[in-house]
Image (cartoon, rainbow, N blue to C red; front, side):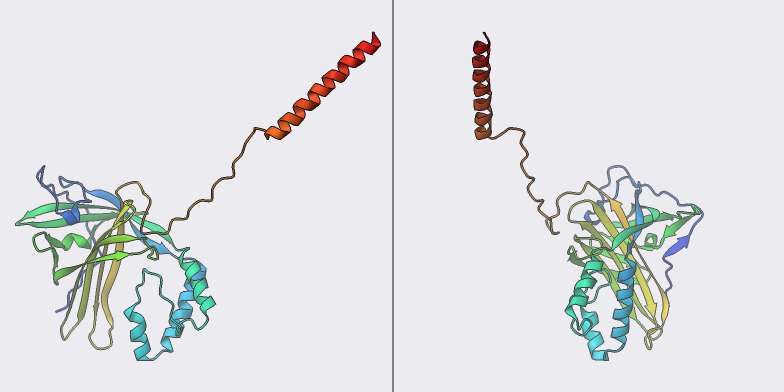
Amino acid sequence: MKSLIPIFTTAATAVMVCTAVGEELPAELQFLPPGGMRLTGESVTPAPTPEFLTMQKEISARLQSLSTEQKLDFFKTYRADTLMPYNPVIWPDKAAYERYTEEWKKIGIKSQQTVQVGAHERGNGQWGLHGISVNTFTRAVSTLSLSNLVYDAGRNVWISANGELAPVTYTTGSDNVYGATKGTRWSLKKSDSLSIINETLSISKRTNGEFVYLAYAFSERTPGNGTVLAQGSYVLRFRVGPPAPDPAEEVKTPEPEKATTTQEPQAKKETKNNRKSKNKKRSRRSKRKNR
């Protein structure tokens, strides 16, 4: 059965669903405010340099020339949001990989739209999310597709129209676009004669305590040639605290500042004092002679 889930479904207004005061959110959702209030954040996307995009095109061209087996080996370790490890098949010249790495480090994070997400209790240990996005230009309000998901706190699974998303904990290092994070990713994969569906929701927190990321992705393809029937994804970022020193990322130790002093060395002081004393004695002798 086909299941088309739009990434943003339009809604004229967003209804606030309040929870009872004092209800405790599940551990996985405790970055959200209590009482049904929404947390304001932003949808974000990587912002690569033009040089990096050119390199990506070159890599894609090389991939097309590989055998099916080589492609499968490559995609076993490939993640779109993480620096690719060195592969001599893709980079015969090691210097080209080093240039690729340098451009990767220059990738920034671009803000797209303002978003708000909150949680409401549904009973029997289940929680729902309600999220909206606000178009930057038109100010039109849309409901986020994650509003269709239900979290079962007792079993730690998310339930969608397609089935249950099972959890796996994960970490990312500083070579990830969004930095070093720790979190949980819930995934579902199902297929039938009509389509193959992949659905993922992840919640992670920067190890420096600054941001929480909530990411959702959905795709539906035909089982034969993999024709895309529906797909979409987004990453939401919420500031939850001031950044602290991040032990999971490389921290450059600043060079010690050169000591600056306004005091003169003792030897120079003594030399100057001796000169002053001799000049005074000469001045006295001169005055006596004049008398």
